[in-house]
Length: 333
Image (cartoon, rainbow, N blue to C red; front, side, top):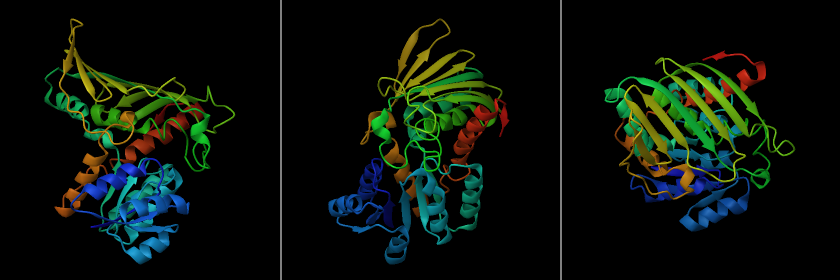
């Protein structure tokens, strides 16, 4: 399958590496509005460089595109490709509004191509063990979830023309750094039916238009409660913590490490397989696993699970959190 990667920023190098190593795929093009960035990857992989997405689609006729652009382009670029029956793998978020999510879902349903959102942390072994424990009931009924994202994004992170802007990024902490964790809360605890949220800008008031800190109270269809706290005003990029309380104990994932806390308070380190992180460690190591699974699904005509419907739910949670914070009211999904 011929593959083009659109957007040659920081995260794209994981996509280039994974596609280059996959026996099912062939890199054919790198696209970026800044020609020097596209040329860098084109020279590295011996492929063609473009500054125009539309020109690349016309000339290369790829079987799949990876969308690694600023957020506001994710949905329109995906809809264009799906309309041409080109498979799409998009970095998160899939969309920055409810209307875009619905537009994307309609485009996926009408297309003969596959669509995927890159929520690579679903492939973490520790997450799989937690979900299995919820399903098999081995620790009793699920009672609640608490999750923490405490990272560091200083003013230098926002020097480009899109990070920190509502128009192009769609928000800040929640839609960019925390959306992976919000997705995992729903994967573990079941669909979110309502939430109450508060977001604020505590550290970068003169730098970004969106939030650097947020808290959310979830109401899940499973009946379990969930709470989330996140900030990009911490001193470092600490491992994400997801703690899941059951009737008979607790499981706590810290990054890709997993611990069991017994009812008596003893802490037991559980074995969890860690992947090979080719990017930053706190991103998780699931990019290659997700990308390989996506192409295996296409080759074997299996449904890829993290599509515009499943993956779009996290975008809807983010939008609902912003709305709740603005109105001070609970928002139902």
